[in-house]
Length: 150
Ligand SMILES: Nc1ncnc2c1ncn2[C@@H]1O[C@H](COP(=O)(O)OP(=O)(O)OP(=O)(O)O)[C@@H](O)[C@H]1O
Ligand SMILES: [Mg+2]
Image (cartoon, protein in one colour):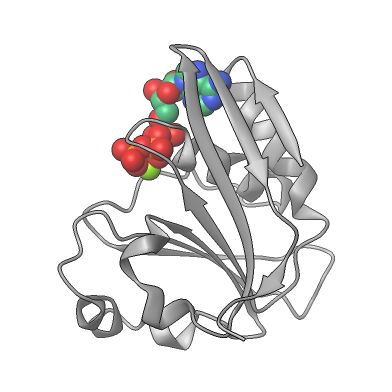
């Protein structure tokens, strides 16, 4: 599905539509250049899933984990990962990411997924690609979920 967003809030609303289709164990891979709107998209998903905390970029922490108390009791964690500063996959393992990626109680949202192919192999992936068209406009392409690497 392709969408055109003309504001950060519209990007959050597009993200919210995806929320209902996601299940525990799913991984959302967010691709796009610096400032494309990946974190903004995560904010919309998190809001739709009932996260009250402000979502900020985990560029320095690598991973932020939010507890979920939404209608799906099996879905316990929203995990926001940003691999931009990562040098290798081991650095992400060191902060415990493996416990969450693909875990049935967790929904993982990953910025710069291209940097960790080994950790995404075989996971149930949805892919979101964001591209600048002008300063306020983004095209957002959401693919169907698929099993990568199979
Ligand atoms: N239609 C739009 N959708 C999303 N963001 C927009 C839009 N128009 C303008 N913006 C601006 O673009 C920026 C997007 O920043 P955001 O942190 O979400 O990007 P990012 O892809 O996560 O970047 P990074 O790679 O640095 O993590 C924000 O400053 C936001 O206000
Ligand atoms: Mg970001």
